[in-house]
Image (cartoon, rainbow, N blue to C red; front, side, top):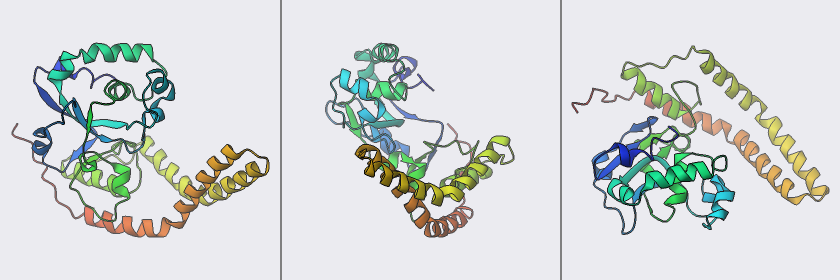
Length: 267
């Protein structure tokens, strides 16, 4: 996966292509995305990354060295509409390999980093529904499936992140005859992880709050702010737990009654 996306101009002898990561469930008509006209000067289209908002969040060192805007928009490369002809004209593969070698150890996401840094001003923005992160799906109040659902921070066939996105994947896989094996050691470890995450959430909220106060007293304002943000996250996590569980139970029950068209494509 580290290089597969930058190899597309060399691997495919077609003018344009749609690229999807293997951990994407498709619930929208992809022909509408494939037929999309790119804006003038743009070479591909993608959705803003939901977990890495800016170039500097990937690599402040590379951002500064390439004189790019620190808060420049960062894109997730899990779903892309790509103008392969233009990439070939600009020798994108060669430039990407050079980038990955020169900045080895300085970037976080391999070919996704190369795409963002080398094409930072030539990427068209797609609506979020063309690449919805699984954690965003979990935060919905309903089971709106008019999207491409991307399991960006989990591998639901290997481990569990409890919530509607996990339930949706398992239901889809079961109907496709590929039921998830929940008895593996890795799957059970993930269940233990989430048990202790929830059990220790109040303790973490209190501990981070105390640490923030102590850092304020000692005049370490940056660390105090960081710990205060962490405390706020865990306290909100605990406060919202009852309503979150109610919504998730309702949505999971709905998902378990869904029927999907999982017949093999004639193509």
